[in-house]
Image 1 (cartoon, rainbow, N blue to C red):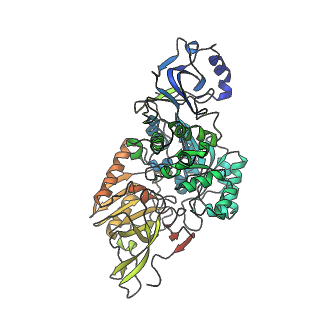
Image 2: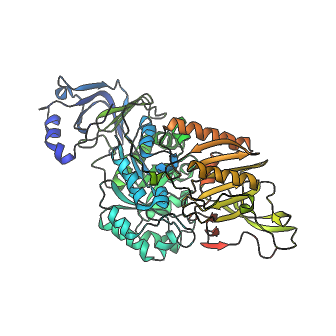
Image 3: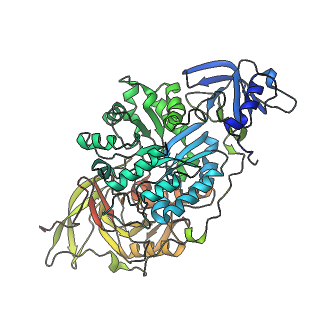
Length: 600
């Protein structure tokens, strides 16, 4: 099925009024359902929805007057009629899919609106890459709103990106038709210290009357937090505790609670509503990062809503957090987020509000999915060669590129080690005593090597350090060109020869994820677009990703969704310890620190 154009409310107003008054027939009538009204927080049985020009004309107990000879009638049969779900903060690139294939994957799960921040591609291709994502998003049959990335690099002076985003870029993008606001302002020290560049980006967004996205990853809720809020960010998704959620809403921010593939931050924070009784209007659900395997096998925003309900949230409140709260936050409550007159006709039919089976999805007045199958075309952008040739190492790597030399005469050293935390984005700053052999520092036990390989400018640079928590054993290495947010190449391994094999393999295929053990490639996910995405269907990418995760398990890793932890090891704006092309970064102080303790 191909999509039909959505009429703007002003263009459709006269016809909406005629249909609502019964003077003209509707294009579609959904008949005999239970109206889930997220404005009044009610379920109202025995209602019909009349739809025309892609919008809702009326919701009434009897829409027989709106049915004409050509009206498509859908029998709800007593099922719940609820608004299409909204993802308030997400990165399409984390699904390893293009916007078209991401849309095709999530439409059957009832997601009809997404607020996406393409800052992953911004780091690789700059403003041109953002425009590519924006343009493919605009032609989809559901609503994909784009936030202009704010921070490339995310931490100036601590990393080098392929491109940088400037205030001039932000000001230009604010005039694009699909831009809804500014993406997450990750440089929270810059905002708190009134950095002119950060404030210029925020000012350009506010002058355009658009929403400034937040990202405050520090546990410090003192003066720095107060200064950050004063700078203008309107929401935040980096909270992990109930105190984080409460602090944000008390200061006038929206608390975005995320359940991604590896981030489980809803359960603790939602107790602000379920146990402490705070007003739920300022709480919003989102995913942030979901890989293709989660989308195909578990769901998208329907998964988040079900999880919130399982955590004790009233189903109607959970639905508000995934519909009208999100729409209101972005100034779109007259367009999306509820089943009320004039809004886009994004409707889900479900037989149960707790388990939330997504049985029928209507997007912009058309049936777009039925019983888990997408029924509509999701058009692809014509990605140019410049977006497909982005891995530049400078030279073929070998084992010597991954050596960490010990001080002369040392038998052991004390190293600063990145500690992975299961199901959370933050890491721990650990220290470990490591052995020395032939003058080179060796991994030991659960501590193995990590390297960041520069891949944007072909400098040949390799930064080496240590990481703990993956549980790998044997001679292996895993490499990925998905390395939030600078998106160089991250290589984690127990053997330097395998690390070189993995890195060179990704240069050969143009980006992706690979895992080698004993000289054999166990799994490969090819991501040729910016080294971040595949334009293959989600099910194919998910199958490749599952083979990758099984290979990780075969090498001793038992972490839940360990690949997500791997991909974040270069994210130098989330504490405590990260790696960049410039060295090891202590995000608690935003300073580079040595890999080896100079005292050893």
